Image 1 (spheres, rainbow, N blue to C red):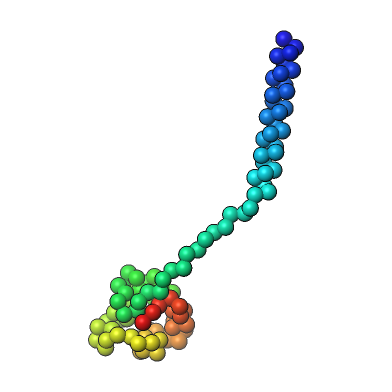
Image 2 (image 1 turned 60 degrees about the vertical axis):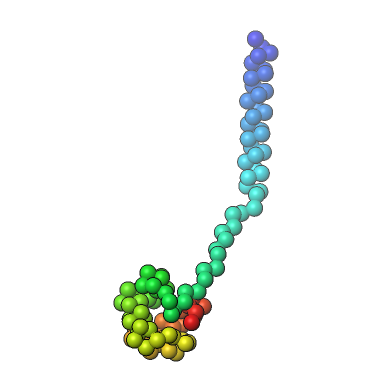
Length: 102
């Protein structure tokens, strides 16, 4: 009976030590790294309304204005031509840098 008790106590202590060692190993592990994928620039000359509203500073009204302007006047060649759209000024144009292509 005494041997059984000693065996059980030894197993409990052993499991406790192993759990503690495993916990320390988890703490020592490398931190998680978040990987952010590059989002491809949106083609301003073919983007849909849904795509345009994902751009910073562009809501539904500005997105529709971009679509209307390109249907009336043709393709945008550069940022200056995009700024001819009502509501797209230098501030919005700066936000769009690197997020759109022509």
